[in-house]
Length: 86
Image 1 (cartoon, helix red, strand yellow):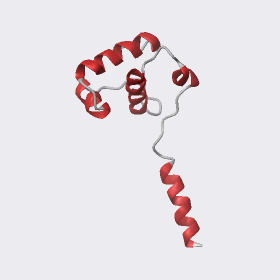
Image 2 (cartoon, rainbow, N blue to C red; image 1 turned 135 degrees about the vertical axis):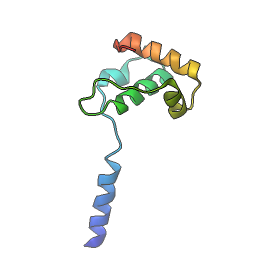
Image 3 (tube, helix red, strand yellow; image 1 turned 180 degrees about the vertical axis):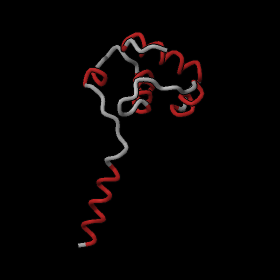
């Protein structure tokens, strides 16, 4: 019996690190892979009922392992499509 409980706990632990996104965000072909990753990171940080996220370009660049310039491009691209305000 204790083995089953341990396995169930692992399943619960694995299900705590995810972000739910609308299908449109996944299938929108006008968005590059880098811009999609940047947008999903912002969505991840704006959890629950948050409507604003305050973070630096440096934080995003380090998280995505990209340059500052690339992050700026990704943000412009995703903000033009999703109408997010900087």
